[in-house]
Image 1 (cartoon, rainbow, N blue to C red):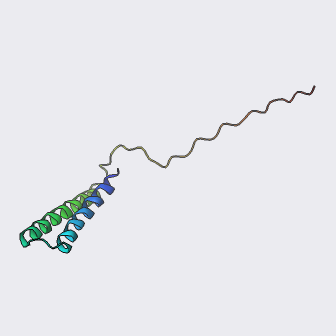
Image 2: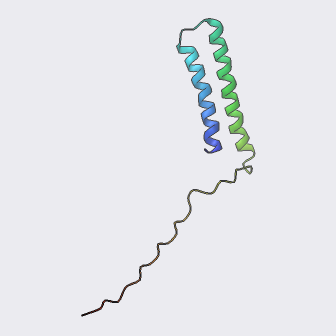
Image 3: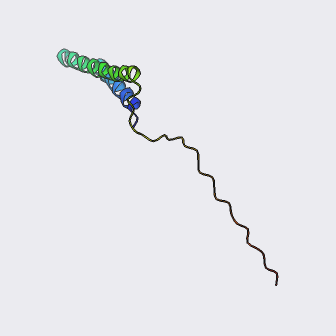
Length: 83
């Protein structure tokens, strides 16, 4: 999985934790704990995204997925024999 995708998923999961803590009727202390946890996860995801923007040269050694396809081998014509 790409590092950009991982950072975006971390950011989104923090937002989902916050949303769940608001929508579900839980005790006040649990809601605050979930809100703070969601905020921390979201901030960590944003930190990863900003880190990628600031230092784009640190990329993993992944092979590019869009490579030119190899040309198909040409078929040789067989001589037709007449009987």
